[in-house]
Image (cartoon, helix red, strand yellow):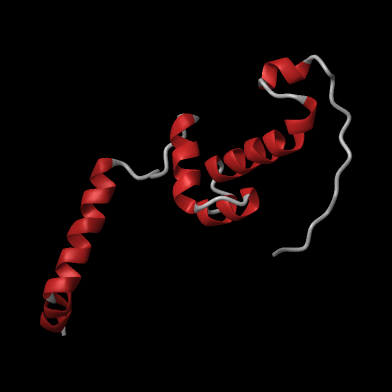
Length: 102
């Protein structure tokens, strides 16, 4: 568990409708929106966001999908380059290239 603070927030009652929530569910809804936004801004990891919400990482990834937020921020080309680097490391071709440079 983590150290917590409590924040009191004045909130116009008519905005509950905009959030599609009830007063009793407002706290959890705001936590969810904050976690989603902090993740989207790359200020926290998906694991930390899931922890804050008390859900699994897989459930958080599903939540991202429902809100149209990408889990992966890399382009397909960047992902392919990373996969290629991993293949080279696995096959030892990167260390062979480094040895040839010496």
